[in-house]
Image (cartoon, rainbow, N blue to C red; front, side, top):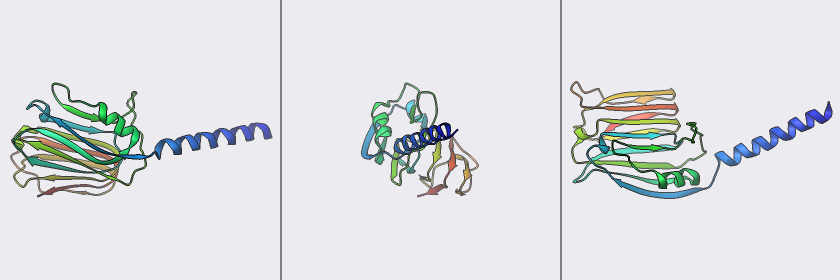
Amino acid sequence: MKKKMLLIVICVAVLGVFIFNYVSEDKISVNKEWDLTSEQVKNITLKGISQDIDIYIEKSDRNHLSIEGQMPVSFAEKLSTLNPNEQEICLDFSTSIGLSVAKLSGDKLRMTIYVTDEKNLEQLLVQMNKGNVNVNVPETFAKAYKLKTNQGKVNQPDQQKATQGLIKVELGFGDITVKEI
């Protein structure tokens, strides 16, 4: 019986060390940008990341998206391989079987969505395990908001009566704030 207990304790300890090393990995600076067509800028998705992020929607003379800051090395490697398809851009950090693993990171990312016309962005979807999400939109931005967190606070401006799209944020743990700037 003592041998079985010892074996179980060793297995649990090895598993604990593996999980701790997996979720607390080194970080690296990222600065990535994608040019977007008018089709791709309609639907922008960010999934599976586990850290604070500030999202800005700004007018520009061309449609493009940038993401910068510190992130775990494995996420940065995945980011370098992500490219928009013909219909949208999806920044998906989930594993190949669709799981989203939380990494320990106290760093904040900045994602800026540059649009030639705010009406072009029809849907912004953010799905994350944990982390605070701050979405900064122009005062003239006429979008509906669907904001849900399982544990945290939600702050948003009043809904516009006439909207042309949707900003949807779903969090496991963290606060969601939408601000007009």
